[in-house]
Picture 1 (cartoon, rainbow, N blue to C red):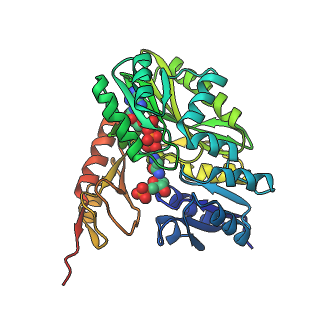
Picture 2: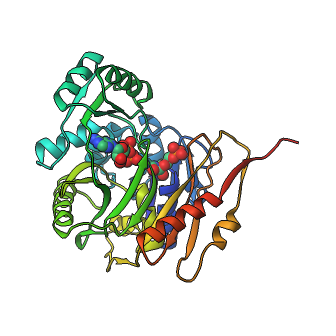
Length: 392
Ligand SMILES: Nc1ncnc2c1ncn2[C@@H]1O[C@H](COP(=O)(O)OP(=O)(O)OP(=O)(O)O)[C@@H](O)[C@H]1O
Ligand SMILES: NCC(=O)N[C@@H]1O[C@H](COP(=O)([O-])[O-])[C@@H](O)[C@H]1O
Ligand SMILES: [Mg+2]
């Protein structure tokens, strides 16, 4: 009856779009996350609530539902269990090794720089304050310090003095996820721009989407746009590096490969072996979008041509307060900004709770130039407000 059964490990906004794509192709979807009614659960056939770091619960869910594909959606997963499941014949997307290497920054950075020879910033790892100071002396100041296990900029800061290195290291350890108190100390790259190169490993080979530019604040993205302007030789360099690492990781699926562009060079930063948040711009600017590409690659289907439909942008809608009882206002105002030249769309993720800075939605725009698309997406995002519903 179903084309295939997918189990999503993590059910946020990215998984929700994968689930929608999967439902459109007649798949059966089991959505898992640490809390009930997570975004992807609202569109899936079945949901399971457990921590993805709980290996026993993860194995139990897999054995209960017997999915054709186990699809990691977040980074923090018990990857030892994923590896054991893969050895037992279950299919992990793209591979358990890819999930294992990318969950920890030391894994993917060492693999990229030391095994594959990709261009990266200078870096060292530190487990103590003294090691952090020595690492900073090695890579130079200013430097960026991040927990090895974290995402969306959590626990990340930039240090310009040895004293700040101490504070930044303590902050990284305080905010880390998981059980490895280790930080990466990285050379600060004064980049000209940064991009995500969506790279798909599919039955018909390795294909690239048009590069996506993005602006980050506090380590989390605010706006993304596609296509990002890049000199042809820089794009070629990034594509070669992306193909090298995606091939080496193996398996099928879409990868978000992040680069800093500085002085005409593409400097590899990190990679997600799954759809990337900045790639939400493809929901308005590209066919198939990144979620559909991920799904087709997983299922072994041809990708067909990837068509970029012109200057497009996304801008995030963040909550400014913590609340379990809230509603959105201004959705009509945002959509009313759309015109024939500049279509506007929204995705409101349906997260049941807000937190300060939590991403609750995204505004999407297409226009006649990148600047116009970014401005339109920002204006639409700004029109949407999250208000607390007063208790009666
Ligand atoms: N070495 C660096 N030099 C300059 N800027 C940096 C450096 N490392 C990180 N940044 C900035 O911080 C952002 C987030 O860093 P990174 O991608 O490593 O973190 P993350 O927590 O994995 O984020 P996400 O999960 O959203 O991709 C980068 O996109 C970049 O803007
Ligand atoms: N950069 C990684 C990323 O964008 N991940 C996306 O955010 C969700 C968690 O959101 P939450 O923290 O608001 O629950 C994840 O489930 C995934 O969709
Ligand atoms: Mg990143």
